[in-house]
Image 1 (cartoon, rainbow, N blue to C red):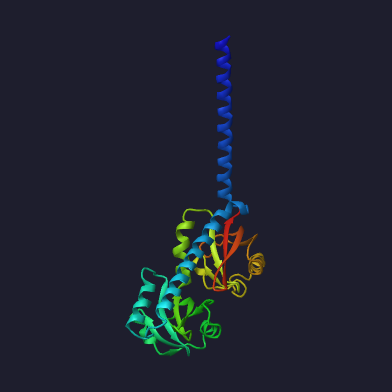
Image 2 (image 1 turned 45 degrees about the horizontal axis):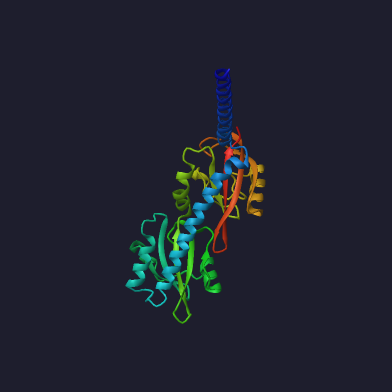
Length: 286
């Protein structure tokens, strides 16, 4: 009787273990399917959060280094050797930075690194929006996309320089190729993942997409997007709300694959110095 009882207890334990194993298998397979189909916001949220965190992390790094550079330039000769060294240090190991510069209080670009862009020294850029903004507010600025004098679509980060007595002396500038900047961050995150990421300015300009043909096109004005009314409606929602979910119809892989498919998406916002970018994570509905 004791032996039978023990055998019964063992069988109960084995049955419970099998039941638990089956339940766990179903749970993990279900999660894997959700990750592969990507039709729910919950399935795409981890990628969105990781993308947002990494971009904001880089924004914080650039902000700290610009602040440090501005402090070191507060008493320096802004066109001297020390100024050039400080600018050079800002660029080390950063292929997405076009150049670094110093703009004086009247809006003249007086110092530029690297040396191949020194021909732009002395140029009056006081009419550029980000230069006007930093001169007026005396606060750090991140520009919208613009075609820099270097001939590259970029964003500019401007950080004000003050003397040790608080007088505004100008600003230290970073010109960043935003598509390369974002690609460096996102390439590893999206590699081998079913979800994809694109980034948009609040005016509808696409700053980054896995299809390079879409970069620097505006969702609201470019002929490429006009037939896709659901995409335009979705993008208007993205502009009007800092985060949310939605869906739209568009080419499967841009110009690479023009089969029209439904895409489910979730978005959120990153920003620096009051300027914002919308990050959209999407996946084709299976």
